[in-house]
Length: 260
Image (cartoon, rainbow, N blue to C red; front, side, top):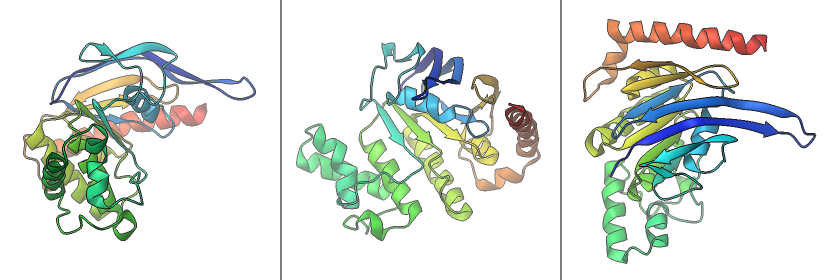
């Protein structure tokens, strides 16, 4: 199951306890097509995560609306799977129990839960660790579990907020390849927030560049590299040209942010 997302005139203003207003997002208009893998790239503090939280239903826009298959997003829902940068597993549950949690809450029969959990445990390379607890796993393995948990619920769209940002570089590269491989086989609609330019290009078929705060989408670039993708593509002249273009875009926004 995958779906189409429409972000229409979405803005967000935060108000401090003292009444001071801060505009995080200026009106954003953006479409994520069915089976798209879109990365949102931008400098720190530009509103990328705020937009993702609004899509997830965890935050409300000040103006505008988000539509998923034509239905307005008004709060969290099983049709959107969210993976955060921080490890958000339940520490008192085993890996298998974490992955089955949403399925159990939906009332899925026990045997069906187990079969679905087993499928995604194998898919993310965690077979043999089903009865381990999160504290017994590395950060990369915990994020594999979080991805498996999100996918097990069969959401229409997968939302990822810098999910590999806390990982070492080698693990991060492996996780990029893992997630991309899953997307290539499952063809989920994916919206992925990152500040890493290489990651943004390697993962996506489209990169949306955010401006400095208040955030808006200033540029969209298509990424036409064929699938399946191999990490060696990162050294190709075509990849390096895209990276140079995006580096200039981000550098200009970072400098604009510093001036503010």
